[in-house]
Image (spheres, one colour):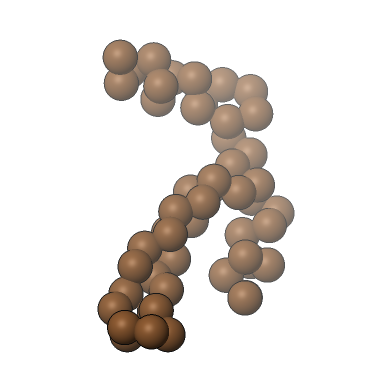
Amino acid sequence: MAKKTVASLQKGEGRTYSKVIRMIKSPKTGAYTFKEDMVPNEAVKDLLAK
């Protein structure tokens, strides 16, 4: 099953997206959480600049 998922990401439009993982600190507790997003390659710099 995993092979199909990987293969489908490598065809056509799958190459135009990147997985971005950000570490975000909670203002209430101070704990860190991770947020994952699939974004187009052109929007990676804009997303990380926030």
